[in-house]
Length: 275
Image 1 (cartoon, rainbow, N blue to C red):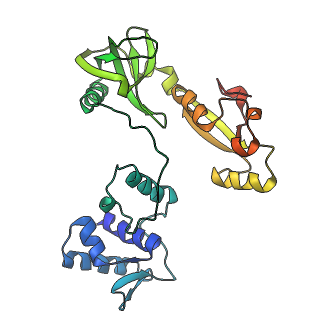
Image 2 (cartoon, rainbow, N blue to C red):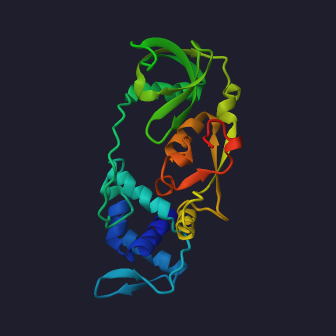
Image 3 (tube, helix red, strand yellow):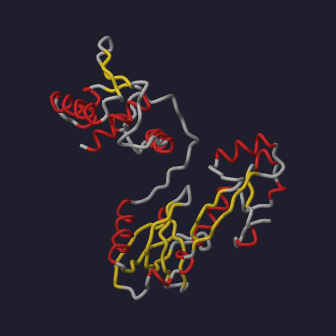
């Protein structure tokens, strides 16, 4: 019921209207159930919508105030992106009328479902699993034992954060490079031993000082900065990927301020950052 109330409010906020057919299509309920859901919403938030007889739909009233959800632009755009990337079918999104959209292409990562299942099971059971892995430091794939304890996403690829018995240290294994898995066994390695995974590094980010005042203000708004800075926590194990993705792994002077836009304010506290 709570989800239905949130859906009604979502449609009212983002599209300005909602009707019984919307509820029937999204939740698979009957006409009477949809009518009951709308009446229940009216009883709980009587000032939020009015019935438009000509359009045969409920429309958002001028006094609308969210009761069951906090409007979230990130959530809305995440749904648009999920549809764009084929993760969610258009009919399964809460957005009724999707705006025209597209996204920059990202190469598909060919992760074998059976491999991913083995990794997830090993994480859940705290086991080691034998994998046939193709590293970039070796011309041919080889079998090795790893003890995965977490999944990690660097913005482009999924990794299995694992203890590698061959190297004797914790590493990131690109899951799409695991060709196959074999047997599994118990392991003595503990997640707590992965210090780089546990350590959180704080990235203090600010607008590029060479930007104009108006440009700085819009960058501050774009990144949700307060008083010219925002603090972004990142696991040390993922620090390399975070710096690279934000363009903070190179000297800010190497690019035009309009291209770089942001800088790291606490470079001395961040390993691998460029001053």
